[in-house]
Length: 218
Image 1 (tube, one colour):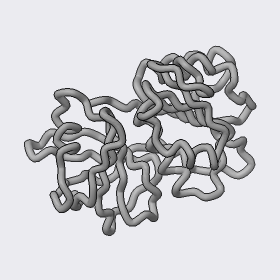
Image 2: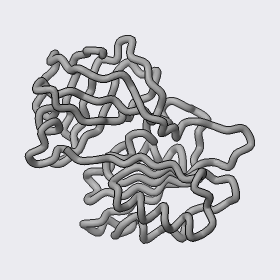
Image 3: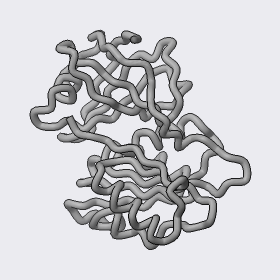
């Protein structure tokens, strides 16, 4: 298992922070996850938002009150050592299939990270749409970058922030592009993923076109 060191911990909001680690020789595919180990051998999986050729590994993490790992990570300092697992998982939003329709990305919270990694890694990846839900606008990350790469529909569930939608991503599902070969990539909390998956299946989307990655808070 690779060891690396902290380059920076950037507080993005009172709930969200960015952990920046030295990448070194670590290789990964966009959408893969790493287990990050607490010194007491507790670990949690996190997916980087950085591109696979970037000098650093960047993770956007929700700091959970009382969280064993997220709280520890938020308090790290430059130069501290961090132990990672090898990358794992089969969520691959950056894979392009010749002749296929552009994919659709749907994320809540820090579930946006594998999509950011894919977009940073694959210059010609142009999703048909990205539906992105956060509690508050301040928790949304890399919005300007997302807007440059695809149609972005941003939802804020706990505050009104015009022109963005005030509500949940599930309010806007009728806007999703629906073509016979479109693949849908869903990442976030399990409740959103189950609701969106059921909605897509009820409209004839085949299970093989729905790709899911559940993010947990800890």
